[in-house]
Length: 605
Image (cartoon, rainbow, N blue to C red):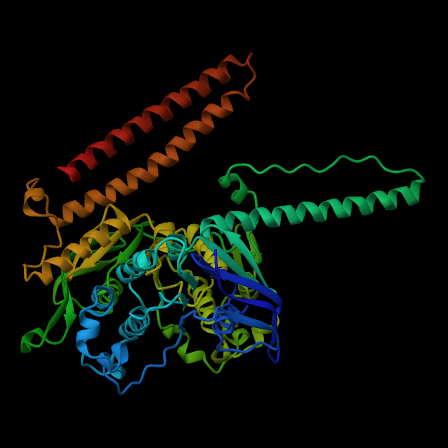
């Protein structure tokens, strides 16, 4: 494969930190490279150096003579006063770009809903990002360098971008370098990874999942080597003290299946034990959204604009729901309705008396009043002691487990990075001990390592969880069921993100053909079962609850069977009692499975 660009012995140092120390890299034709690392370790800087936008202190960067490089930065250089037309295609005559299928595909996929002659300065953050992407992608480049390309994009656009990049070049041609915290995107698009850390760049084969496995194995091997070194030192000390060489055995290392490999290894770089923090008790009723229509304006004056129509959503204790929808689909409106902050124009919302909300907003509004205060000052307003997994600990210790150092506790909140603010806000939200946790884009500004830590925290969340995110990996990891807002209607998507994307494409195609918008519920032919919306929601909750109970009872049955072997074979009374317990557990499991089957069949009629 021909090399397109590279760097040799590059060193770069900022005022307070050495970013790169003798880094040598090469980008070949056909490479699809994902770049990961902690925030601040130099991922964006690496792209700037390789693109030639930043000159290193030492070493050199080389480009093949005819190579064309396109760079998408985290922030765009678009002119606010320019039109979208001018920002994307410049002064090129219409016949040039309009006659190109490739250009039309990019424009249709990214900015079909953006006013072509509208001003850039009037666009939303997501529209502006798509305009900048379209500007870059209509160009013909040998190498594309994308810095956080999925920021501000909804899940549908992220899916389109992944498909475009996979088909942009033929196999063995072109090259892609992408910095992103979107792990689904990395797995979908990239065939190799670079990890930036401690002034180095380590290469790995495969996408994100393969990288994680290799990194875990690398750390295990490093630990084995360190154990061997320490063992040799102990042998030498023993020889000196006893006059004879101590006996020892060689360490053994064997790589098990991927699951065992990961489960056996502690978190890399960061430790998190924020498990089972106390939450307020939830009663039977949590949140019932019944036939709600909500929006903005005054219905009595005719200025009302509905955003959510005829929505029914029954949210129970321990439910873990994800809310999907394109930008502007009404997710924020639905969250406001759920919390009782926005009164519906029709229908009603019932919130249980024991519900205590904990909300992490996308804009981190919770931190706005505290920007001039230090972290320690803010933490001083919370309880001094929390119990985590039966052990007492302080808020400061918990924050250190989220990646903060003791020195940073004296930092002003206004001086923190976006990722640090989000981690702090998440901890403060949990320290309030809510029992219903609402998270709006919690993964923004977090690197892949910190996202894994947040997922570990959410995995053990004992209350009700409602998550809004465009991060597909995070959505599928921490929620059990997904609901989607499509054309203002809320519907359960049993097939998860894949079904949601299919439905959005169908709705978009229907609108483009001037066809009536699809109903939010199943077609009438599928509603001949006579169930109302509320009854269908109740059945879905029942199925979800039964699935959890079945898993619990099955684990109990296996535990009882395993305990049979520990009973003395001569203890006949004990054996009989244990067998009775096994039989009772089996009958209970069978009843649950029958109830689950009946409820599932009613939903599928």
